[in-house]
Amino acid sequence: MSDAVLVSTKVNGDVVEFACPTDEVLMDSLRDRAGMNGVKEGCGTGDCGACSVTLDGQLVCSCLVLGVEANGREIGTVEGLTEDGKLHPLQEKFIEHAALQCGICTPGFLVAAKALLDNNANPTETEIRYALAGNLCRCTGYDKIVRAVQATAKDLRKSKKR
Image 1 (spheres, rainbow, N blue to C red):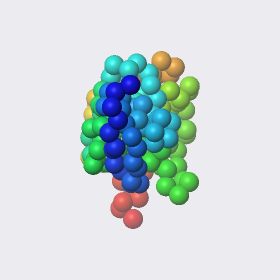
Image 2: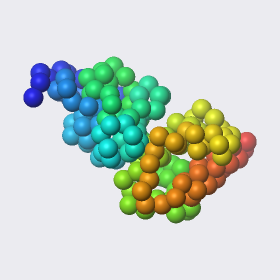
Image 3: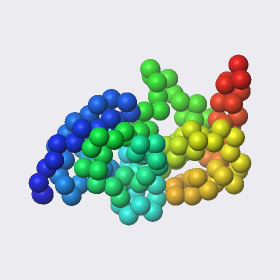
Image 4: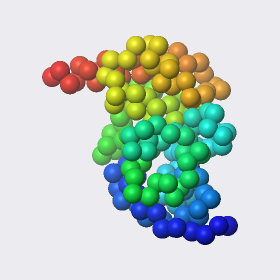
C-alpha cells in the first residue's frame, strides 16, 4: 500500500474526509471510504460507465481518476439523486419504462443522464444516445433507457413551466 493523504471533498453536497492511498482510484475511495456503494465496478478500464460520477459537474469514470484528485472538489453519485427519500424523476422513469435489469449499469446511466439533462433540458434522441454512449448494458436494450430519459426531460420541462 502506498502512502495515504487526507482528502477533503464534497460528496452529494456533504463534506467527506478520508485517508486515501495515493494509488487508489476514486471508485474504490467512494465505495470503501465514503460508503457510496452505488458506484459500481464493471471493467476497471473506463470502458463500461458503471462507475460514472460527476466531478465538479463533469461526467467521469471514477475508475480512471485517483481518489486524491477529489481533494477540494465536488462529487455527485447516484446516491445524490434522491432527495429526502424521494426518487429523482429519472429514477422513477427508469422504473416506469423498465429501463433496468440487473442493476450494475443503472447507476452509471442515471448519473450520465442527469449530467446530460442538467446541461440540456430538451435533448434529441441522438444527443441522448451520444451522452450515454460511454455506458454499456449487457442485460437490456438501450431503447428503454433512451425513452426513460426522453420522458424525464419532457416532465422536467413541464414542471419548470408551472
